[in-house]
Amino acid sequence: MTAIIIENATVATVDAERTLHRSGHVVVDGARITAVGAGPAPDPDSDQVPAGARRVDAEGCLVTPGFVNTHQHLYQWATRGLAVDDTLFDWLTALYPVWAGIDAEVTHAAATGALSWLARTGCTTASDHHYVFPREGGDVLAAGVGAAAEVGLRFHATRGSMDLGKSQGGLPPDDVVEDVDAILAATEQAVDRFHDPSPESMLRIAVAPCSPFTVTAELLKRSAELARARNLRMHTHLAETADEDDYCREHFGRTPTEYAHDLGWLGPDVWLAHAVHLDGAAIASLAATGTGVAHCPSSNARLGAGICRTRELREAGVPVGLGVDGAASNEAGSLLEEARHALLFARAVGGPKAMGVMDALELATMGGARLLGRDGEIGSLEPGKLADLAVWRLDTLAHADIADPLAALVLGAPPPMDLLLVHGRPVVEYDRVVTVDEAEVAAAVRRAHDTVLERAGVTS
Ligand SMILES: [Zn+2]
Image (cartoon, rainbow, N blue to C red; front, side, top):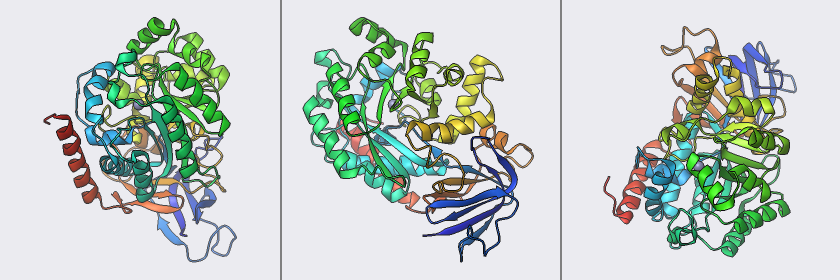
């Protein structure tokens, strides 16, 4: 295992006191952080500094905890740039037939591309909400898991699902939905095969029916029972658009949040993607139950869905993290950009005090760690925590004159990245992913894109 000493950098710890060292150090021994503080690293003969450690002089840089992505659909990296002017329901209807053509090879290529780009934009822990399982598609869940291991990111794969086809009143065509019993059996299998609940875990599984308009109440109820019996976290889309709100009132006589509550889908073990259309009662209900929200501002804006009430959610005590969402509704796929957009959108509707730069950094790090149940292990730079961190260079043309390093990171252009460590291992060095060949990954994604479009009979 590597030992690394990062010195002479500004260190944003994102600890409970929001400690910022203007010139500080971080020491990593193997998978864990052993020291963080102001000034130079402790003496080489101290317990905190491993012998033979690599020294990184990070003058001009900002060190932050690695970002935690709490909502994405990795397979969508192969279907970017389609239905670019549609609402969610029209965009989904256009893309379901394309997604019906994915298989393990396409998913592996797309996931490798998406995860590599996440790493390049500061992400060290990724989650994947995979809910399309074509009958002839092979083991698409394992394809994402394999890609995460190759790129080297910490990974929370959710076993997604859809069982409410068009003929039953749902939105997706019947050929992309599965049977409830088959979904639950496959979920159990994924848990047995992949889930590692240990504190140093690089891979966990969560349970994730897709959304109220693509799954039955039975699937939601039984998924929650399975998750709680196996001590797994639960994830779904909720309250994303006004159309979904109308759908829930029409079909269930309730708001999406009331519907989720009645089916056991609120709680401290649940995190919801989007949660844009919430009234005061819904926010109170999320706060009272400790339910988390994965805020995906770019996707919400791309689909014209609305702006999440992050200020009110945070003031009510709701845990909030960030997600890039699937790349088919957010071609940029950058978590740093989500932090920036979270701040800008919160201020656009709530004024300049609605969110600060440290708030935005906290959402991207500790906020996400909380949603995934990992805040004891990742999300901040503190001795004993896992060594997931990013070293951003802030002394180039783009930022050199910005005195506040957090303002430079969150409000400025995306900075060059000198180093990204996951579990103490370098994944990015000097703006290149070092675990995979970026050019090969890009070529594979292009082939995957052509393959799925050809299968769907779509010309791009
Ligand atoms: Zn999504």
